Amino acid sequence: MSKVVFMFPGQGAQYIGMGKDFYDACEESKAVYELASKVTGLDIAKLCFEENEALNQTEYTQIAMYTTECAILNVLQEKGIPYEAAAGLSLGEYAALTAAGALSFKDGCYVIRRRGIYMEQAVPEGQGSMAAVLGLSAKQTEEVLKTSLDTAKIGIANYNCPGQIVISGEKGEVERAAEVLKQAGAKRVVPLRVSGPFHSPLLYGAGEQLQKELEKISFNKIRIPYIANLTAEYVTDSKEIPELLRKQVYSPVRFEQTLRKLITDGFDTFIEIGPGRTLTGFVKKTAKEMQCEGITCINIEKEEDLSQLITE
Image (tube, rainbow, N blue to C red; front, side):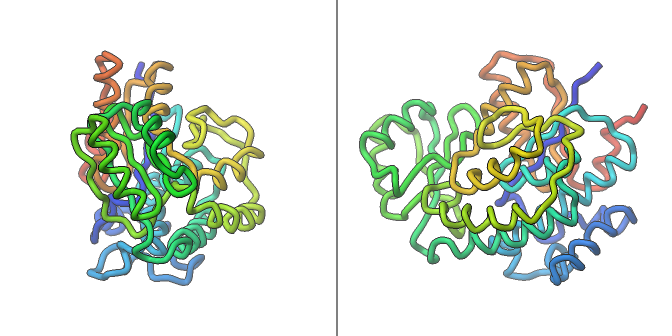
């Protein structure tokens, strides 16, 4: 019997037209887009489906991604596709919380809209950046940052998978880090096209602002286990969620550690819900490093992808 985990991607995987297949074919998906529009006062379907510049702006990307992921999730839940855990990367943690039953979609829309605005406004445009560090271990990257750079201005943003770490912080400090990391043996340090230094110490203020919004939300009992980005541990008590989400804004996303935990615990079927195949790639690299065979990865991005899932 397979052990299934639902995974949700983060910012960066968005594209015009994401989720449109589901919107057109499934009433339960359309209803999700309509509710998101009602809660936020934005035309979310238009934002996701029609050519526009806003989709790549953090303020709008986050609500668009969350809505699309939950619109697909809604279809899978309606079809009774079983799953025993949920996990998400950064923004995807909110969809994982919705999949876990802890966060209602309506409350998710409310808080995600504000999270996007606070993160967008936290650092003036052009002053922060992020870069992917390829071919260096997490321990080596941590050591270089600790000994050679100002850790108040730069930090590790993402532990994605073996051999891929993302750093984030002040633009000048990230550029300096790139040189030092290459000297330390990194194969490449690739600047990322993002609008801010996410998951870095510079976003501490955004986390504090977000906390005030999280306090207004009533989190439900966790029905399906989910793993937090901050700790890479299962969360069983809903009372812990606001603090985990507050710190998540300016702390590293421990996704590789999350995958290692799931694989060690016998999860063998990873279903990525939403745009792109980023997380699937991380699963494959992590499983390979762990010398673990028999892992199945499925992407549910378009309505036709549902044929990969066989309901009992």
